[in-house]
Image (cartoon, rainbow, N blue to C red; front, side):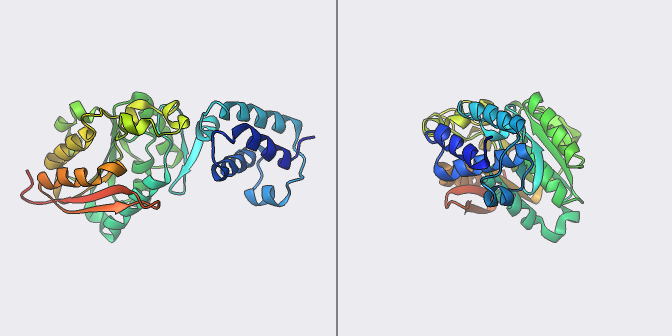
Amino acid sequence: MKTIKDVFADFRKALNTIYDVNELEAITLLTVSEICHLSKTKIKAFPELELLENKAEELERILNELKTGKPIQYILGKTEFYGLPFFVDESVLIPRPETEELVEWAISSVGSSQFAVGNILDIGTGSGCIAISLKKNLSAVNVSAIDISKAALDTAKRNAKLNNVNIQFIEDDILNSTTHHSPLTTNYSLIISNPPYVTVHDKTQMHINVTDFEPHNALFVPENDPLIFYHAIAGFALTNLSENGFLFFEINESLGKETVKLLTHKRFKNIELRKDMSGRDRMIKAILSSNAE
């Protein structure tokens, strides 16, 4: 019978050209834990543990999918973000740790004043990970979220139900938005977005598990207009964000200065560019001033 040690050896042999050593270890550990219902501690402590035949077969099936480059999160149909469970499929981006940092920044910025914040809008919600995490941690606020993709919104609604939060989901395109005329847009105190920002040049340097599987409409922007969504969202914020309201963005690490410049021209104030855990320019906070235009 196959042991845990055998499974790790099989995964290393089959996937060593796709993932680096640390990623491979993490993926294998997660997969064995999920399929065999074993804690990661037990997996590491008992590598000679023999697996039931049906579990070994299931692990082999997953390995074959992983060899195509398909992300483990899509294969398992779930992931974790900011300590919460989320369903994911190929209609939504897989939530990433860098975005958790953006959420943490927003929550800490609101802090104890959440009762005064009132309304939050998440633009391009995808799986709903940002909106749901904010609502879960700032229960006093009202949270709305928009996305152009009905399939993504269906996934986000499932995740809101999974996490027992009430979110107003809206199908809309921020680049050609009817949301400007919605009663939901009256006076947001905080607008947050992780919009598409990957250029064609960036794409050439990305892993196939992103470029071949994750939704392109949530990733890519025109090479000649990489800040198209930031222009649109900042413009939307000028008329739908309350005075001294917060605007948060996740950004392309190569375009931090350009994004700051864009917001400066639109008369936002207290603009702060922050690096992520890897030391890359990854997120921005700005405040809407009274004379913004």
